[in-house]
Length: 436
Figure 1: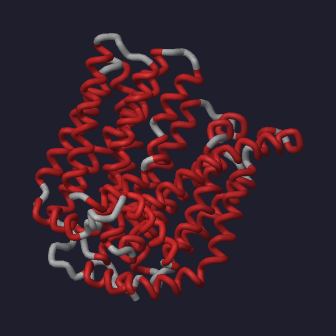
Figure 2: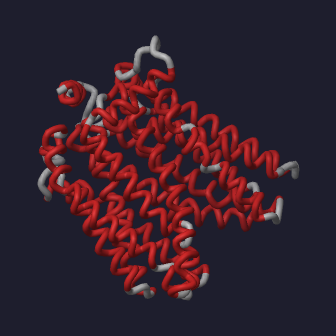
């Protein structure tokens, strides 16, 4: 009952509106920020490879760029719930702008080194963690609860287009002109993002953030404990956390061996691999746009289980019939379904979580997902190694997809009825169709 009362109060706040000017400024800031992230994903490892030819050291730079998501997501959630989110996002991207501009000068001065790049990667990703968690926590202060699928779908689409379709190719193109040039564009993109944030109607954003700030008298440890206990005490959030652990863990089985699957099982080179991933990104864009439509067509609480069934059947098909054509179709379709699934779950989480603890709840979910992904990637490598002597490397590399498919189907079968009941109990706003 406590969750329901808080949700109703938050849904009726006067500063909420349908997708209007404030949301689209927010969307523009996210688009520019993700474009910078996409370029950095290509440019920073490439720069590291020009500084050293040691694979271990290049990997160290890449690892430092991922570490903050595992170590700092939960503290970032505490911070997001305590201060103005608009100010926090603006500060995070301002710091990233300064970092990229400084790195340009270091490159031009030929002073780049592995320790320096590792430090830049860690700091830049730390700011990304803060910005992204603040973004996830702010969306429901800009739109009505029944418009969250549509808003989250637009944000997810912008992230995919900016990072995968535009950012990475642009970063690679700029590297051909000059090693420093992608970081110049990174800084420019951050300036655009900060400008878009500053254009938001400040009183709307800050009234939302300030009204959800957790009391400053609580210690950081107590604040973090509240986020964890909120997830644990709410049966719907607890089930969603369990779903995240199972699905992210199984999906990550194929991540560590995906390149080898493309090479050894499908016989593709780097160009073919790039084409498959581009097709997958396009599928994700479609998924971001169809989430609200599918949610409106299905009974409340049914979309995530339906997505799991579709993903499970598709990955089983891929694992059993690993051809180039099947892989291209499945990657495109599953990418669309994955985005729809994640957008749907996140919108439910936004509606059922009290606003003053949403940042910490989001960070708990993020930390769990990153932690289980690391374990799953390691387990995927062990699985393929163990099976290779028995069935050969080509077939062994297809087995993780069979495991993913079976996990999705089993999870969907186990949670469908329970999930629908909990959504009906905790998310009555989800019954209202988008646009009504």
